[in-house]
Image (cartoon, rainbow, N blue to C red; front, side, top):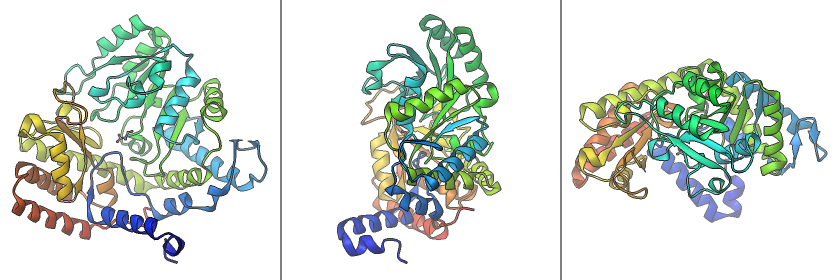
Length: 422
Ligand code: DSN
């Protein structure tokens, strides 16, 4: 059966858009560090019949009948999530990472309470209380930063001082644009001193933690992790909350996800989460995650040799942030656009101590989860980094851009997006 048989017959406009996206993903290199390619098994589950079903509640305790099969998939997703993250409890219903964080805040705090999280410009995330978010009107967000933007070391002394002064209910570790490991032990020690919960938003690195190639905050005593399931974890678009061992916290989180902030769960996506978690439990996923890190290191090497400044001095995970404005005099937006022209997709990004604006920042952010899923290794990662640098240094030279475009095409043909991932 043609995957889009019915859409093709019924809705030409959507059909054409889907074909366009397939072609875009097939013929370009995806370096946005929060994106990935899921297996056809995950896509089948996400497009499955379970989209028809309402299942408010949790397995064994639903508000509507007909839950024989929804209970099966949700229980599988929960059990596999617990196994992957060394958690005692998991809620697999959050619709995304933002929804997971909102539910977590309301579960652990009262309005007006304080969260101590990483500054957005130093790598934190909008949902960690950026002034433009609604959640910022409900809770009080205070910040910690890096001590040294050239090594990425967090200023744990400042973090402790702010914690002692502000008495946060939650100390939040986690980021969307930070390339080093965190010292989870220090977070836990400071949280104990002030009686705060420890939460890690591991959206970006969930797959790397599940595979055991990055540290698991639960090994250091963190209470809760929130995450998305579609980044390095290579599942469907969605969110999840896992709890290390405290049943009281788990119960509060369940009540807050439903009925607190969400209605009926998306059971087709929960089925796809179960399938993706099953894939992440395979030995091949660990090999994949190791390669994600090796590929990021290979890219780091090329950028540093080319004298392009990397924030935090480099990377310990899957992503890199380069100060292209400071190093090459081109803005993040210009870099994003010229790389798009040659078939390499990434995003402009603010850098710590930014001198420009959010819409026209100094940096670019890129990473290796998606290109590694295509089977690329260090040789190809280094090659890609060289192509990026060559393009950035010759952004107005159409001849060079054409050559790069052809090289990107050759790489894409040699490393097609796979259908099977186990
Ligand atoms: N949009 C995601 C990212 O790219 O990091 C985070 O929400």
